[in-house]
Length: 305
Ligand code: TXA
Ligand code: MG
Image 1 (tube, protein in one colour):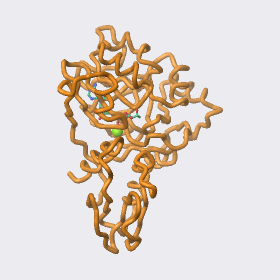
Image 2: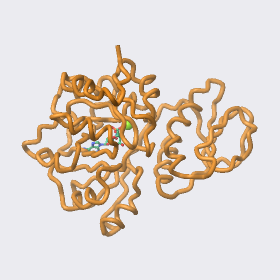
Image 3: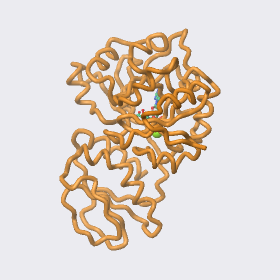
Image 4: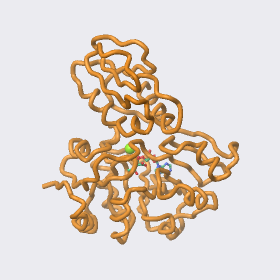
Protein backbone atom coordinates (compact mmCIF):
# COMPACT_ATOMS: atom_id res chain seq x y z
CA UNK A 1 0.00 0.00 0.00
CA UNK A 2 1.26 3.52 -0.76
CA UNK A 3 2.12 5.54 2.28
CA UNK A 4 1.81 9.19 3.22
CA UNK A 5 5.12 9.37 5.05
CA UNK A 6 5.19 11.72 8.02
CA UNK A 7 8.30 13.73 8.75
CA UNK A 8 8.94 11.64 11.85
CA UNK A 9 9.30 8.64 9.61
CA UNK A 10 11.62 9.96 6.90
CA UNK A 11 13.90 6.97 7.41
CA UNK A 12 11.28 4.76 5.72
CA UNK A 13 11.64 6.92 2.60
CA UNK A 14 15.41 6.37 2.75
CA UNK A 15 14.84 2.61 2.91
CA UNK A 16 12.38 2.69 0.01
CA UNK A 17 14.79 4.72 -2.15
CA UNK A 18 17.79 2.57 -1.22
CA UNK A 19 15.84 -0.53 -2.28
CA UNK A 20 15.39 1.00 -5.74
CA UNK A 21 11.94 2.47 -5.19
CA UNK A 22 10.50 5.91 -5.88
CA UNK A 23 9.27 8.46 -3.37
CA UNK A 24 7.54 11.79 -3.95
CA UNK A 25 8.94 14.56 -1.76
CA UNK A 26 8.39 18.26 -1.14
CA UNK A 27 10.67 20.98 -2.48
CA UNK A 28 10.22 24.73 -2.15
CA UNK A 29 8.88 24.86 -5.72
CA UNK A 30 6.67 21.82 -6.41
CA UNK A 31 6.66 18.15 -5.35
CA UNK A 32 9.32 15.99 -6.99
CA UNK A 33 9.23 12.28 -7.82
CA UNK A 34 12.62 10.99 -6.71
CA UNK A 35 14.68 7.88 -7.33
CA UNK A 36 18.36 6.83 -7.43
CA UNK A 37 19.90 8.91 -10.24
CA UNK A 38 22.77 6.40 -10.60
CA UNK A 39 20.41 3.58 -11.56
CA UNK A 40 19.17 3.17 -15.14
CA UNK A 41 16.37 0.89 -13.94
CA UNK A 42 15.09 3.39 -11.39
CA UNK A 43 15.24 6.33 -13.82
CA UNK A 44 13.47 4.22 -16.45
CA UNK A 45 10.72 3.55 -13.88
CA UNK A 46 10.36 7.28 -13.25
CA UNK A 47 9.89 7.91 -16.97
CA UNK A 48 7.38 5.05 -17.14
CA UNK A 49 5.20 6.09 -14.21
CA UNK A 50 5.05 9.68 -15.49
CA UNK A 51 4.51 8.51 -19.07
CA UNK A 52 7.27 10.98 -19.91
CA UNK A 53 8.81 11.13 -23.39
CA UNK A 54 12.38 9.79 -23.17
CA UNK A 55 13.62 12.85 -25.09
CA UNK A 56 12.82 15.08 -22.10
CA UNK A 57 15.79 15.18 -19.69
CA UNK A 58 15.30 14.77 -15.93
CA UNK A 59 17.06 17.05 -13.46
CA UNK A 60 18.96 15.66 -10.49
CA UNK A 61 18.72 16.87 -6.87
CA UNK A 62 21.78 17.10 -4.61
CA UNK A 63 22.23 18.30 -1.03
CA UNK A 64 24.73 20.90 -2.29
CA UNK A 65 26.41 21.94 -5.53
CA UNK A 66 29.71 20.68 -4.07
CA UNK A 67 28.19 17.19 -3.91
CA UNK A 68 27.80 17.18 -7.72
CA UNK A 69 31.44 17.94 -8.63
CA UNK A 70 32.26 14.41 -9.78
CA UNK A 71 29.16 14.26 -12.00
CA UNK A 72 29.20 17.67 -13.73
CA UNK A 73 31.72 20.35 -14.74
CA UNK A 74 30.87 23.38 -12.64
CA UNK A 75 31.67 26.64 -14.40
CA UNK A 76 32.67 29.86 -12.61
CA UNK A 77 29.27 31.37 -13.38
CA UNK A 78 27.54 28.32 -11.94
CA UNK A 79 29.54 28.68 -8.70
CA UNK A 80 28.60 32.32 -8.60
CA UNK A 81 24.91 31.64 -9.10
CA UNK A 82 25.13 28.91 -6.45
CA UNK A 83 26.76 31.24 -3.96
CA UNK A 84 23.92 33.75 -4.32
CA UNK A 85 20.93 31.48 -4.79
CA UNK A 86 21.53 27.85 -3.74
CA UNK A 87 19.93 26.05 -2.05
CA UNK A 88 17.11 27.63 -4.00
CA UNK A 89 14.73 27.50 -6.97
CA UNK A 90 17.26 27.43 -9.82
CA UNK A 91 18.25 24.42 -11.92
CA UNK A 92 21.74 24.68 -13.45
CA UNK A 93 22.34 22.80 -16.70
CA UNK A 94 26.00 21.74 -16.78
CA UNK A 95 28.23 19.43 -18.85
CA UNK A 96 28.59 15.84 -17.68
CA UNK A 97 32.03 14.77 -16.51
CA UNK A 98 33.48 11.72 -18.20
CA UNK A 99 33.30 9.74 -14.99
CA UNK A 100 29.78 10.92 -14.17
CA UNK A 101 27.74 8.11 -12.60
CA UNK A 102 24.38 9.74 -13.38
CA UNK A 103 22.16 7.54 -15.55
CA UNK A 104 22.38 8.66 -19.18
CA UNK A 105 18.58 8.55 -19.26
CA UNK A 106 18.60 11.76 -17.18
CA UNK A 107 20.50 13.52 -19.97
CA UNK A 108 18.15 12.27 -22.71
CA UNK A 109 20.87 12.05 -25.33
CA UNK A 110 22.56 15.36 -24.46
CA UNK A 111 25.95 15.74 -22.75
CA UNK A 112 24.50 17.80 -19.91
CA UNK A 113 22.72 17.30 -16.58
CA UNK A 114 20.29 19.66 -14.83
CA UNK A 115 21.42 20.13 -11.22
CA UNK A 116 19.04 21.26 -8.50
CA UNK A 117 19.66 21.97 -4.80
CA UNK A 118 16.21 22.51 -3.28
CA UNK A 119 15.73 25.00 -0.42
CA UNK A 120 13.45 22.75 1.57
CA UNK A 121 14.49 21.30 4.92
CA UNK A 122 12.77 17.95 4.29
CA UNK A 123 14.30 17.55 0.84
CA UNK A 124 17.77 18.47 2.09
CA UNK A 125 17.45 16.12 5.07
CA UNK A 126 16.47 13.30 2.73
CA UNK A 127 19.30 14.04 0.26
CA UNK A 128 21.85 14.15 3.07
CA UNK A 129 20.83 10.70 4.29
CA UNK A 130 21.18 9.07 0.85
CA UNK A 131 24.42 7.78 -0.71
CA UNK A 132 23.19 8.85 -4.17
CA UNK A 133 21.53 11.96 -5.69
CA UNK A 134 17.86 11.86 -6.70
CA UNK A 135 16.65 12.00 -10.27
CA UNK A 136 13.55 14.07 -9.65
CA UNK A 137 11.12 15.47 -12.19
CA UNK A 138 7.95 17.12 -10.93
CA UNK A 139 5.60 14.57 -9.35
CA UNK A 140 2.84 14.56 -11.96
CA UNK A 141 1.97 12.59 -15.05
CA UNK A 142 3.53 14.08 -18.16
CA UNK A 143 1.44 16.94 -19.56
CA UNK A 144 -0.44 17.53 -16.30
CA UNK A 145 0.12 20.50 -14.02
CA UNK A 146 2.79 20.30 -11.32
CA UNK A 147 1.58 19.63 -7.78
CA UNK A 148 2.11 21.69 -4.63
CA UNK A 149 0.38 19.46 -2.05
CA UNK A 150 0.78 15.75 -1.20
CA UNK A 151 -2.95 15.15 -1.74
CA UNK A 152 -2.71 16.30 -5.37
CA UNK A 153 0.29 14.05 -5.96
CA UNK A 154 -1.61 11.10 -4.48
CA UNK A 155 -4.57 11.69 -6.81
CA UNK A 156 -2.35 11.91 -9.90
CA UNK A 157 0.26 9.19 -9.25
CA UNK A 158 -1.49 6.19 -7.70
CA UNK A 159 0.51 3.94 -5.44
CA UNK A 160 3.46 6.26 -4.86
CA UNK A 161 4.82 6.88 -1.36
CA UNK A 162 4.80 10.58 -0.56
CA UNK A 163 6.64 12.49 2.14
CA UNK A 164 4.14 14.95 3.58
CA UNK A 165 5.76 18.36 3.64
CA UNK A 166 2.57 20.40 3.37
CA UNK A 167 2.11 23.05 0.70
CA UNK A 168 5.19 24.10 -1.27
CA UNK A 169 6.44 27.55 -0.32
CA UNK A 170 7.09 28.99 -3.79
CA UNK A 171 4.55 27.07 -5.83
CA UNK A 172 6.16 27.53 -9.27
CA UNK A 173 8.93 25.36 -10.73
CA UNK A 174 12.58 26.41 -10.66
CA UNK A 175 14.21 28.76 -13.13
CA UNK A 176 16.36 26.67 -15.50
CA UNK A 177 19.67 28.26 -16.47
CA UNK A 178 21.79 26.49 -19.08
CA UNK A 179 25.41 27.28 -18.07
CA UNK A 180 26.97 24.71 -20.39
CA UNK A 181 27.80 27.13 -23.23
CA UNK A 182 29.32 30.59 -23.66
CA UNK A 183 25.93 32.28 -23.24
CA UNK A 184 23.61 31.68 -20.32
CA UNK A 185 20.29 30.49 -21.61
CA UNK A 186 17.14 30.68 -19.51
CA UNK A 187 15.32 27.51 -20.57
CA UNK A 188 12.41 28.06 -18.20
CA UNK A 189 11.36 31.15 -16.26
CA UNK A 190 10.74 30.38 -12.63
CA UNK A 191 10.67 31.57 -9.08
CA UNK A 192 13.83 33.67 -9.56
CA UNK A 193 13.82 36.13 -12.44
CA UNK A 194 16.51 36.52 -15.07
CA UNK A 195 17.00 40.12 -13.90
CA UNK A 196 17.68 39.00 -10.30
CA UNK A 197 20.29 36.52 -11.52
CA UNK A 198 22.00 39.06 -13.76
CA UNK A 199 22.02 41.72 -11.05
CA UNK A 200 23.14 39.57 -8.13
CA UNK A 201 25.85 37.78 -10.09
CA UNK A 202 27.03 40.79 -12.14
CA UNK A 203 26.30 38.98 -15.39
CA UNK A 204 26.01 41.34 -18.37
CA UNK A 205 22.49 41.22 -19.82
CA UNK A 206 23.78 40.40 -23.31
CA UNK A 207 25.21 37.17 -21.92
CA UNK A 208 21.74 36.05 -20.85
CA UNK A 209 19.14 34.94 -23.35
CA UNK A 210 15.66 33.54 -22.90
CA UNK A 211 15.35 30.31 -24.85
CA UNK A 212 12.18 28.82 -23.41
CA UNK A 213 10.90 25.57 -24.78
CA UNK A 214 7.20 25.25 -25.48
CA UNK A 215 5.38 23.07 -23.03
CA UNK A 216 2.04 21.43 -23.57
CA UNK A 217 -0.47 21.00 -20.76
CA UNK A 218 -3.60 18.89 -20.98
CA UNK A 219 -5.92 21.26 -19.15
CA UNK A 220 -8.93 20.38 -21.28
CA UNK A 221 -10.43 23.89 -21.00
CA UNK A 222 -10.28 27.08 -23.00
CA UNK A 223 -8.26 29.72 -21.16
CA UNK A 224 -8.76 33.45 -21.60
CA UNK A 225 -6.08 35.71 -20.14
CA UNK A 226 -6.31 39.28 -18.87
CA UNK A 227 -10.03 38.87 -18.33
CA UNK A 228 -11.83 42.16 -17.88
CA UNK A 229 -15.34 40.82 -18.16
CA UNK A 230 -16.91 37.60 -16.96
CA UNK A 231 -19.86 35.53 -18.01
CA UNK A 232 -22.17 33.38 -15.90
CA UNK A 233 -21.04 30.08 -17.42
CA UNK A 234 -17.32 30.50 -16.94
CA UNK A 235 -14.89 29.97 -14.10
CA UNK A 236 -12.76 32.85 -12.90
CA UNK A 237 -9.22 32.70 -11.58
CA UNK A 238 -9.04 36.05 -9.85
CA UNK A 239 -6.15 38.14 -8.59
CA UNK A 240 -6.62 41.08 -6.23
CA UNK A 241 -9.98 42.83 -5.88
CA UNK A 242 -12.46 40.76 -7.86
CA UNK A 243 -14.35 41.82 -10.97
CA UNK A 244 -17.56 40.43 -9.48
CA UNK A 245 -18.85 37.08 -8.29
CA UNK A 246 -21.28 36.53 -11.09
CA UNK A 247 -19.68 33.49 -12.61
CA UNK A 248 -20.09 29.82 -11.84
CA UNK A 249 -16.90 29.33 -9.87
CA UNK A 250 -14.35 31.80 -8.59
CA UNK A 251 -11.06 31.17 -6.88
CA UNK A 252 -8.84 34.11 -5.92
CA UNK A 253 -5.07 33.62 -6.16
CA UNK A 254 -4.54 36.47 -3.69
CA UNK A 255 -7.25 38.85 -2.59
CA UNK A 256 -4.65 41.27 -1.27
CA UNK A 257 -2.77 41.18 -4.59
CA UNK A 258 0.33 39.47 -3.15
CA UNK A 259 2.18 37.90 -6.09
CA UNK A 260 3.99 35.33 -3.92
CA UNK A 261 0.73 34.14 -2.38
CA UNK A 262 -0.68 33.93 -5.91
CA UNK A 263 2.25 31.70 -6.97
CA UNK A 264 1.67 29.37 -4.00
CA UNK A 265 -2.00 28.96 -4.96
CA UNK A 266 -1.57 28.96 -8.73
CA UNK A 267 -1.36 25.27 -9.68
CA UNK A 268 -3.91 24.08 -7.08
CA UNK A 269 -6.53 26.66 -8.00
CA UNK A 270 -6.06 26.26 -11.74
CA UNK A 271 -6.37 22.50 -11.29
CA UNK A 272 -9.53 22.80 -9.18
CA UNK A 273 -11.22 25.01 -11.78
CA UNK A 274 -10.13 22.68 -14.59
CA UNK A 275 -11.84 19.79 -12.75
CA UNK A 276 -15.27 21.44 -13.02
CA UNK A 277 -17.15 19.44 -15.61
CA UNK A 278 -19.82 22.08 -16.24
CA UNK A 279 -17.27 24.73 -17.23
CA UNK A 280 -15.70 25.10 -20.67
CA UNK A 281 -13.77 28.32 -20.18
CA UNK A 282 -11.48 29.56 -17.44
CA UNK A 283 -10.93 33.32 -17.40
CA UNK A 284 -7.83 34.61 -15.67
CA UNK A 285 -7.54 38.17 -14.39
CA UNK A 286 -4.33 40.07 -15.25
CA UNK A 287 -1.29 38.95 -13.25
CA UNK A 288 1.38 41.63 -12.81
CA UNK A 289 4.53 41.01 -14.80
CA UNK A 290 6.76 41.39 -11.74
CA UNK A 291 8.89 38.95 -9.74
CA UNK A 292 7.44 35.44 -9.81
CA UNK A 293 4.47 36.89 -11.74
CA UNK A 294 6.58 36.59 -14.91
CA UNK A 295 6.82 32.84 -14.39
CA UNK A 296 3.07 32.61 -13.73
CA UNK A 297 2.37 34.50 -16.96
CA UNK A 298 4.79 32.31 -18.93
CA UNK A 299 2.88 29.22 -17.75
CA UNK A 300 -0.50 30.81 -18.51
CA UNK A 301 0.65 31.63 -22.05
CA UNK A 302 1.63 28.03 -22.64
CA UNK A 303 -1.96 27.04 -21.81
CA UNK A 304 -3.14 29.03 -24.82
CA UNK A 305 -1.15 27.05 -27.35
O1 TXA B 1 11.35 23.15 -9.49
C1 TXA B 1 11.67 22.20 -10.19
O2 TXA B 1 12.56 22.26 -11.05
C2 TXA B 1 10.91 20.89 -9.96
C3 TXA B 1 11.26 20.33 -8.58
C4 TXA B 1 10.60 18.99 -8.33
O3 TXA B 1 12.66 20.22 -8.45
N1 TXA B 1 11.22 19.93 -10.98
C5 TXA B 1 10.73 20.02 -12.23
O4 TXA B 1 11.13 18.95 -13.02
O5 TXA B 1 10.03 20.92 -12.61
P1 TXA B 1 10.53 18.72 -14.49
O6 TXA B 1 11.17 17.48 -14.96
O7 TXA B 1 9.06 18.73 -14.47
O8 TXA B 1 11.06 19.94 -15.28
C6 TXA B 1 12.45 20.10 -15.41
C7 TXA B 1 12.77 20.63 -16.76
C8 TXA B 1 12.33 19.73 -17.88
O9 TXA B 1 11.44 20.42 -18.70
C9 TXA B 1 13.59 19.39 -18.63
O10 TXA B 1 13.40 19.49 -20.01
C10 TXA B 1 14.59 20.42 -18.13
O11 TXA B 1 14.18 20.74 -16.84
N2 TXA B 1 15.92 19.83 -18.05
C11 TXA B 1 16.36 18.91 -17.16
N3 TXA B 1 17.62 18.54 -17.45
C12 TXA B 1 17.99 19.24 -18.54
C13 TXA B 1 19.16 19.28 -19.35
N4 TXA B 1 20.21 18.52 -19.09
N5 TXA B 1 19.17 20.13 -20.41
C14 TXA B 1 18.09 20.90 -20.68
N6 TXA B 1 16.96 20.89 -19.99
C15 TXA B 1 16.90 20.07 -18.92
MG1 MG C 1 7.23 18.93 -14.86
